[in-house]
Length: 456
Image (cartoon, rainbow, N blue to C red; front, top):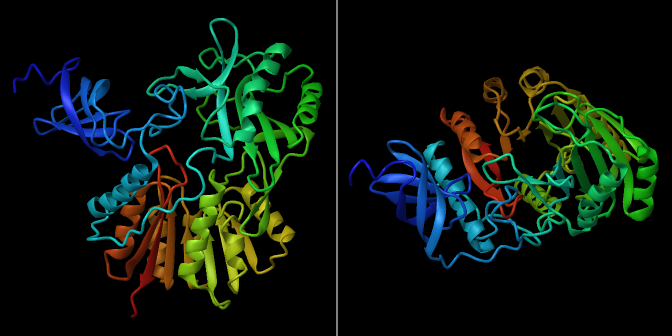
């Protein structure tokens, strides 16, 4: 191969042999790796090289010469443009196979585990219509129409949506019609370049079990004329809508929600039933977007722990108590740790509403609160953000020496890194890894890892 071929703009023939953890297809050309979005293992393709490095390149799909047997027709007409999903063109069973392989490969490569005990990927209900929350940026089109949707893949260009096949179908009427109401009210749309205008995002939530819905407009400030009247109209039009809120975010930031939320009409939360308990969920509350699979993963955790009512359990990164409270019903004492005070307030309220009295919550960063508990827990449950655990959390766990650790992660790479640190000195061994498909039609995979301490 001459050097002139391996350059930006060149078109090459490529067979896709793997899928990356970002969802791109992977092929090899003359010992070099090429990443291609919108492909699947088994595709024979023509691709155009874009970002070219000495040993790898990114490319765009130019033509499918022979489609893979795993390729299907997407359910969404803009699936090839919208950045909300990466894998609608892939057979769902093969999506699960790919996620299973991804977890194994990352645990081996980053964690150093040999033949890690990875179970089949847990999945429930449909691979479509599962999302209980959707938050859409709002823009104004060149023709003056109000648009809401996801950004085009690899760009900041908005793809306007009137329905989305992965969100709960009961939210679709709101997505289509609220934009029209915004237009009729002549409310200004936020321009991020000039930092002017009002409406930034449209956020929709639904309780999968209760059907209760929340509608939230994220605004630069609250200068929306007649918002109270419009909010009441929405409540009358949508019988399942229980509240309309405004969230103020006046900063130049990529963060969606600001800290200040006001209920304009109805109530500022919806009720959801999860694991036999009732939870209060507000516009900015973290709650897993796939209710059914989250509950199925909880059942796996409960089965693995087999709590006998005598255990002391610490739930680090506990949020509003989604896992804390069901486990508290089976343990002697549970302590929840959470850095966000608003989440702790909701967790305490949820515990009271469900008459669970053997749980306490502490506000503070886990790396600071965990070393100072004053007790040695039998079990520690971890559910950190994507960046994984801070180094001091791992150090505290190795000092506390709980008998069992459950680590729930939304990013396999940081999970593998932290599991290696916990296991490398021979204190703990990995007994089970349970992937769960919280995000069908995407490359994301949730994973729960179970660690047992070796006897002294």
